[in-house]
Amino acid sequence: MNANKREQLRVTLRKLAQANAASIEFMEQALTLVRDDLALDPLTFWRSRTRVKPASRPGVPFVDQETLSIKFRGRSCFLGNTLPFRLFARLAQRPNVYLTY
Image (cartoon, one colour):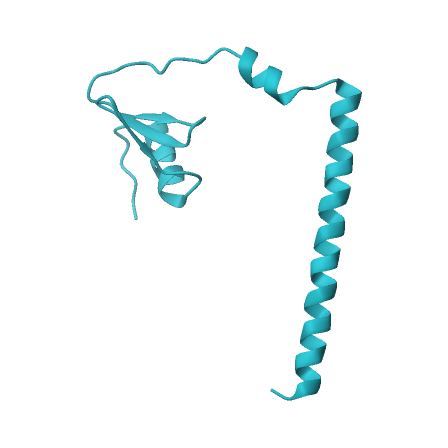
């Protein structure tokens, strides 16, 4: 790669980083305005809400959408926002249903 193309690439990446930083700044400003307008306090919201206990059915795994984990026989497996978690959650919605390839 010659020096001219490298410099063009550096300039382009620098501009892209600046544009990304500017868009994040705009999003933060918008969120601040919305929060102030609605008088929202995230900490109060998360502390005050009630937790729904999973329906305990022995031998049946439970998909916990809040923590992105699977609970089974008293144990929990954190999968995060991954394809395996979404697949398991989708399959758990309709148990005992045959799915084709």
